[in-house]
Image 1 (cartoon, rainbow, N blue to C red):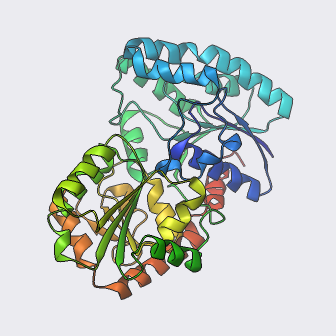
Image 2 (spheres, rainbow, N blue to C red; image 1 turned 90 degrees about the horizontal axis):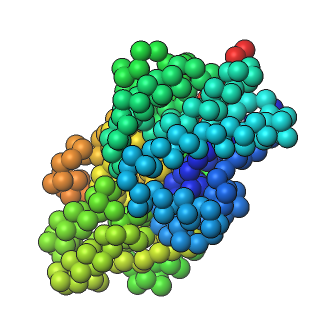
Length: 395
């Protein structure tokens, strides 16, 4: 089949990883996939889409139209921004119609965006199947609070009802939608996945990195991602600096950058633990797998009850277990003590305790990591997600 993947995102970071993951998964199944992106936001043309959670999304570079749109999201009042989102339906409709005819598209797959109703309207009008991937909703907590909330809910309800099918990233997200909207299209739950061609285990390269960082004989606990408050890395470090000296074999390797980087750096330096908590800053996307490979296990201090954290799958793909809160989307993927280690969500002390309990248990670190890799190989490659979404098409 010829499939059109339409999205209204920046095509960077976890968004870009997910878009290209599903795209490549569909291609592995023998389908042709064409991407329809915002000007300058094609994830296929930018190498940063491979786990750029540890790299700068590059918002200040690239296409001037995209830069203008990004500035719009930062500086205009929320009401104005939402009006622009509504207005975008007109050019999106023209672009979608042209792409469908140019590439003789059989199926439209769209990453859902709030107020984006034109694609579903056009698809129904032209008897074209359209499947929506749901990563956002007016029903869940969002970084940007909604101004036209009632309108957003009505538009979303119509979209969810009239699409051919819906793909939710977690069971909790699916339940929220089913509770919040009177009727929705047939749906499946499809968490994130990993591209094993991007996460190749190279023990020699990982050992070389450990030697270069002078941590070859240490137990390395790792974090890869954005240094932002909602990942909890700030409070995690704040609590760890007072305990890590009692564990001289332990090194905390933090890979990435973000708004919390400087405060975290100052906290580490003031506590005198710079030799045990290492900050790498930004790392090239091509080196991320090597850095994860150099770790013994991983940490994600915080998440949320509806999202599917991309870094979890990346660690598992590299045969590394992760200490992670037991939000329902995580529990759908991680079996405690088998493919990772769970702690009660929002219990910071439990997070610290679980992390430190594992320092001496290198056997469990290796076994859980091995199990995690097998799980990804058997269940959570992007081709599995592609098979799920195609199952929503009319027989």
